[in-house]
Image (cartoon, rainbow, N blue to C red):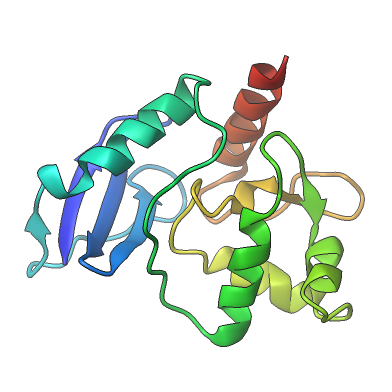
Amino acid sequence: MYYDIIESPIGPILLAGNEKGLKHLDFLKGKKRIEIPADWIENKKFFREAARQLEAYFSGKLESFDLKLAPEGTDFQKSVWKALCEIPYGETRTYKEIAVSIGKPRAYRAVGLANNRNPIAIIIPCHRVIGSDGKLTGYASGLDIKEFLLKLEENNLR
């Protein structure tokens, strides 16, 4: 597995993946932290395009990513992550709306768990999912990062 660490307005971001695609995007600051396994190999060149697209996203010039992704998870989790990718830039959906969209209208708690297990934050936009009351809820890396990402998108729509 290859990895790189890039700088962003919300702190260092870890990218990890292999020839199959990007497997992880994680924040090195915040509540959810990842340890870099000793057998991972640093490779900036491998992640050049991902870094370029993330830089464009943070500068308000990119609304949709075009990267090869290879997240690992259950079929249910993958269906949730696919639904997350369909949430338009600058918009939000509730956990219940995601559950309905994948044909499991009563599985909104399971959707929340799948959201929490999303290994490729930002690109699989789990930050766009909010509580049914419209409040920001549950973001593994901290609500401050979720709020930053939502405001970034909202401000760039104007």
